[in-house]
Length: 528
Image (cartoon, rainbow, N blue to C red; front, side, top):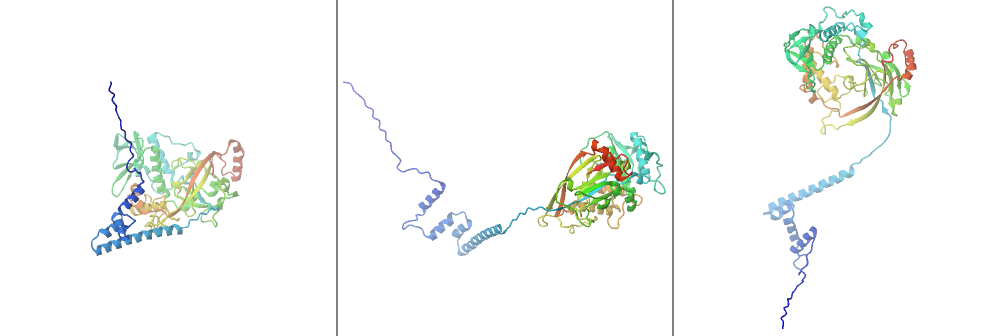
């Protein structure tokens, strides 16, 4: 008989005695509270016990300190601190809610006529050459001599108006020797202690510091030879040599210094007569589809641009306005530039300068003027931005400049630019004893000229260098105006006149103006 073996497997399957629950964080907190603080039955906690439990477990430090502090005085102080903090919280919340519902915001969209801005127009050439030729004869002759010695230029006698020049000067007595007063020099990189003199063409020793006019602003390509001029102080025997990256810039700057010195001694009435009249500058004029003429423009004499003319100035009885955009409803003028009367050394371009500004604003034509060229129709679009700032303590702006310790020497409303120029001119009078020619005169001051102020050129350059480096304190004293209007200009160009219209347009304009603008009419007209 065989034997059989049995293997029994007992597998017991059993569920856990208690279920496993997955609870949210909020439910866990509730379960913990129920476990520690039974809320039903005879063991239910009292309100005092609940408050004590809350104070011991809360993150509010004041409440906890009320429970754990020993002594009634300490508990009383913590109660006062806690209640004060709670009261402040509710008070600030009430203020926020109140301010939210009390602020009213209203938006109004409407269309209205805008006052047309003032438009100032200047010829780039300040004075007619035929009128100032006698005053500048010696200066031009020495300039040509210097160019001939340095570059080998022959004297240019291509124009008929210069063939008969006698080079006589309007100055009485001894003629000023411009190249001796302010020598023009040419330096080589290898040898800076010696320079070639424009007057003699020979090398000479040079003393004093050498200042490159472009070095503080940008890095320029170093050439083998640089051109500059030397300024010295007669009182201290100190000298400084100002060099330029181009001979053109050096000669024009040298010429401009002597030009300002000469014109500073000419009476204003005579300078106005030597410049262009409104009838000579303006050929045609239209505004808002209506014809206008020279009587609608106000004379504004600028020291460096001569006679300028302002349209829609504050001196007019009424300020013109417009409600429509586009060139048809703006100002349209045709200008006669008269290139034959240009000074060849003072200006190297041809055209006019235009600036758009407020009626009470000074036109800084030399700083922000827009140049327009000849034989072109220039369209200028304007976009007005009016800005307002809050004064102290929100910003450092000024309402009208009365709280700025700088006297406004301009007959115009305050601006940051006016303050800076006034500050420099005031410092110029204090340090150099005279005023710089391109800016208005302060009270009881005279323009600089080296007959009465022999050191003014050296003093002016030293002072201007300190101004650029912000060492005079003008930039820290002058502040922006709290309210100002800014005109953003966009320009577009088109050839004018066209070849097909030139045949009839120019003869008609010539007939309108008589024989005054008959020559080279197609080259010297500007339409804006």
